[in-house]
Image (spheres, rainbow, N blue to C red):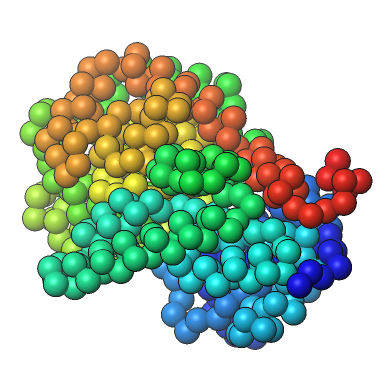
Length: 401
């Protein structure tokens, strides 16, 4: 059963929305920026079909958007497969998250003759690492890991029906590139080209790195177990034991904030380690990184392909952290950064202590970090992703360009 194809791109995001006070969709600004970026290159309408939830996310950039206000369309996702079929039957292509819950959607698209391209973020290894970071009950951990292994079989079955796959970061690219021919690797990044640190600002930063001032260390993200934030204070304590002058500023919020503050107090780190809370991404986070920070400390115990990696690198800030598969992939691709064994705060402290004594290596890494991030700036990344969708779509040749 095939519909008469239109030139519409339909997105089925994994991100769910809550209802806002005006009755609109509460989503993240990051998602809205990404959808708008698709619309700049896609030769037709772009519509997101949104599911509702009562549970707000822990993201820090929520915005309420009314249908018709955004640069792209926003609609409620139909609740039944029959209704979804009616909505997508004429689409040029569907883009959805590679989830076991979208296996039926892949089959539906095949039935309708509508190509579907999936987006993947977490490898099975990373998902299991996240479970182990967040679940203390061994029996519950085992049941969740068993579910993940079953979900992986469904994902691979869905891939066999897909027209393509877009992989955020190297972990899923390495996992799935042999499972589907049309695979695109990208690095998620919301820093636009004109916000990548300038040559003059980077020179000023690296000149400062070469002095004997204390290292200015930084972390930013949700204060949750999967980000490994409870290792930050022990790392700082180990670094101080090595007589390395430094400051560590921690940005973000989450359920572990009080525990982290207690750690800082117990270790008497208050004169060097500070919880800064949440700052606006564009007006606070990016300028602070570009102006005031030398090295990002990443204790992620799992391979979440965090947009944090290219975003901090776009500010001329290299990364030292645990050797999860996502950071390892970024380091291999960019030739910038340092990975140490997982949960080994002593090894991480040793690495940072060495960099404190070898500022030339730190400055060189900052240059390479900026070069990598500039190649993967927001606009260039979204253009590549949209081009990939256009090529896989059933748009007429005249619209494919």
